[in-house]
Length: 128
Image 1 (tube, rainbow, N blue to C red):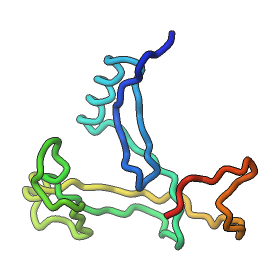
Image 2 (image 1 turned 90 degrees about the horizontal axis):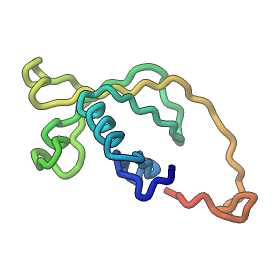
Image 3 (image 1 turned 120 degrees about the horizontal axis):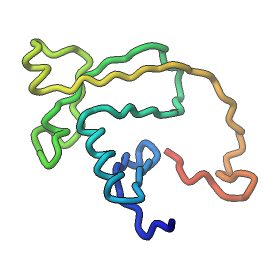
Image 4 (image 1 turned 180 degrees about the vertical axis):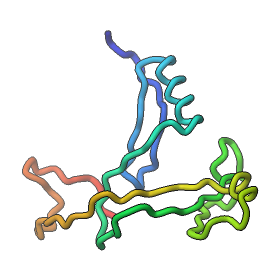
């Protein structure tokens, strides 16, 4: 069956590669939104870094009001703390616990040729 216009479910900003999740129909879009609200979805990212990253769990806290849908409860930039909130009540009301698990960190070799082109002659399109 041909999909006339896929429906947007989720968009990750371009600074992390511009990932977009689409649905073929409204039902899929609703199910995805429900799973997101219930925090039943896990996100897995493959990243490149310029320095080695320690393996294991890295916990940080994000200011919850800044992330609430339709709210402007915090600063325009993302407010992050690596120290846990002073009390459980404050943690529940004002902070979102985020866990980054680094499961593998391996060195890769990058071709020193700086012409931004691959074998097709087309560049990768992202140069931070």
